[in-house]
Amino acid sequence: MELARAFSTMAADLPAIFSMIVVSVVGLVMLTVAAFRSDHPSIPWLGVAGMVVASAWELFQLGTEPGTAFFGAIRVGGYAAFINLLVLLAGIATTILSVPYLHRLKHDYGEVYALLMYATVGMILLGSSNSMVSIFVGLETMSVCLYVLAGLIREDEGAVEAALKYFLLGAFSTGFFLYGIALMYGATGTMYLPAMAQADLATAGGTLLFWAGVALFLIGFLFKVSAAPFHMWTPDVYQGSPTPLTGYMSTASKAAAFGSLILVLYYALPAERWTLVLAVVAVITMVVGNVMALSQANVKRMLAYSSIAHAGYILVALAAGTEAAFAGALFYLLVYTVMNIGAFGVMALLEWDGREGRVQTLDSLAGIGTDRPVLGVTMVVFMFSLTGFPPFGGFFGKYAVFAPAVDAGLTWLVLIGVLMSAVSGYYYLRVVYVFWMQDRDDVVDARQASLGGLPPVSRTSQGVLVVCAVGLVAMAFFSGGLIEAATGFFDASAMAAAGGGG
Amino acid sequence: MEVALNWYLALGAVLFSIGTLGVLFKRNAIVVLMSVELMLNAVNLTLVAFSQSMGDPDGQLLVFFSIAVAAAEAAVGLAIVIAIFRSKVTVDINEINLFKH
Image 1: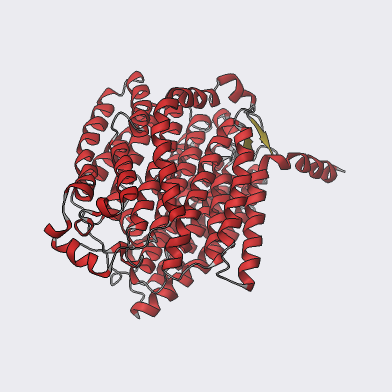
Image 2 (image 1 turned 90 degrees about the horizontal axis):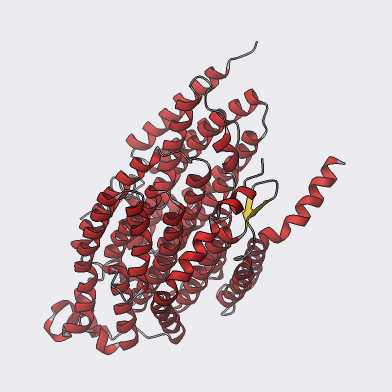
């Protein structure tokens, strides 16, 4: 009788995981099609269609009231819908960008796109989880798929090495992460985030146990978002992995992990104790990312360090810990996802045979803007936006992240962040300089590289890039409304209503 | 005989430490993989011990997921190690250093 009621409750909760169901079922269909003909051209478009349906659903969930489903394991409402929408849009863009890239490499297997779908399912679960169990399952579903995707081109030594490093360090950090969950569970007696905050830690040793658990848990998360000093894997993995998939790893997985981290900080750790810890991590991350990016000759490696730096900017907001700061972080994740997917997308289209993205130097791309004007112009938009120049989304994102941190009294942290943004101008604008202001005939690398002819252009990929670039400009106009909407997700009364479960 | 919770936790912590040290100091990718599995199993032990002592099933629930994840990770990890052995004919992680500058 009890069981029957549980099942009927779960059946009523099914709409809460609609997008997960759609994406995973479509993924299975893709896998079935791939079993008969692995390079069937319709497979990626099936995936795109599935993710479009799921994102349309999430779009309508944006305004809904927060709540929980599946006995408190899953969170529904605006916050989860925002993260899920972000992840799904990144998935759509990545799938479309991957098609010509993987085709050129003769690696356009249907299984790749199916894996991309499952990684997306993991991210959706991560972004909408309300208990430690679903956070763990989501994080691991995402990570295991990404390990495989990193080593996709298994004939290439660099790709396999990237996969091995990603896997070994990822599995290592999973151990810490899980141990952290175990200790937090032992200290509080619950897996549910809101209940964790209300647990009584006063029992002997409970407090120490809890904070030891939090430390281990944070190590796991900081690894996933590649914050220094847990960033060692990032440059190698990003440089070795297939370029469009690197864009996916650096944006969607970060968005989902940060989305989940914000929920944990907001619910389970409402104390002020982690402000200093996260502030210190943010400083190290910003400094390491920006300084190391200065000396990189390979654009993918430079973008890898830049993604570390951007994780640092988001950590500034997390250290501030106010609702406005969390909303700013959400907006920043949106802007960052669009501009970074775009930047990696441009690089994917500029690789001669796809495999050489690992060794391609920036110098070899001298003057490419005149030959490939669409790529050149969109790259300029992405680079200016990544630097944080005013007309583009990146500026408003940085403002949304830094302003609440100043309000929270972290002025010193924001000063370091602004200084580091200024430093980042050097390596971002250098790309613009090389693309447009250098002449190919003046640079030895570029003369040799162009002997084989320019890589073919793909209209669909260019379309995606143009949409990203236009989106970045449009975000400048809508930033106020978007941030306000994001703040609405943290409306105290609404979140309290969703606090039940467990 | 009833064994106190602390003994399980101590055993879990010791196993976890052995696993961590194994990951840090072993140079064979397969042994590193085994050390990671040891870490995950140490956590499983801790979770079950907490779960049992509190009479709360959630910890044991997570252990089921953790076992499944560990299996998936082992499968993917071994596949990657095989791929790297095919190209390099070694699984020594000191010799896998293409990106060292």
